Length: 301
Image 1 (cartoon, one colour):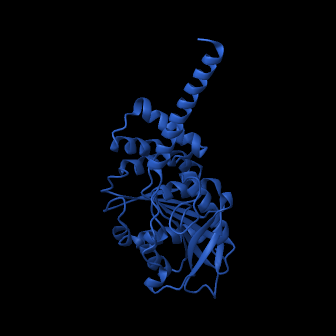
Image 2 (cartoon, rainbow, N blue to C red; image 1 turned 135 degrees about the vertical axis):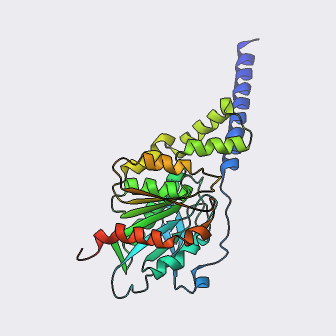
């Protein structure tokens, strides 16, 4: 084979390989992409006054959010809770928490992450991007009239829980964190996803894990809740369902065990990964935790 033909064959082979790799990468992104679920309700359906707002976030995108003022917001700057949904969810799915938090005197901000609900799309969604969105929403909330910027807590579910733990580890002004059904490590969650689709870990599974890390720009070991929990210097409440089959309750115990010097409480409740009905029955304890955690920021205390 002459040199020109050899170069042509090599180029064609490289193009075929590159095309195949691009197809694999497209398949990975397609398989991992979160579904966009439309809102089925809003805070008004609960009899709550609210504002619909857009909040600037990374990459020039904006987030859709509902801000619910505290009952006595006109009289005093109130504590606030920023609420972040899970993968494939939206702010509306977190609204069962709205009435109990409002009645307890908190302002709340229910936000859609990028690629979710009514927020802007982006090239992909990820736990670090959820955390970026939480950080931008926190900054917006801290400047809101009627909100005490020293008493803002983050509450997240599933991927949103991992995200608020990461955000709190990077944002010292966060006063407290409530993590609901967080997984201990993204790789563990990814391996369950691979197993459910009967994708062998060697070699394809490992390739997928490496590609995801490269795409999101973060090592799983750095963003895992078992790593971020010890970097938080504020009170944390870990909430987990005893019947959770998506993220086994042992993962909550792993996060708790990795807490280091972080003041962490673990609360187990009956229910599965998506059950907020059961969490509503335990809102008294959650509110009591928030009252204690945010008390240090109250004027005169």
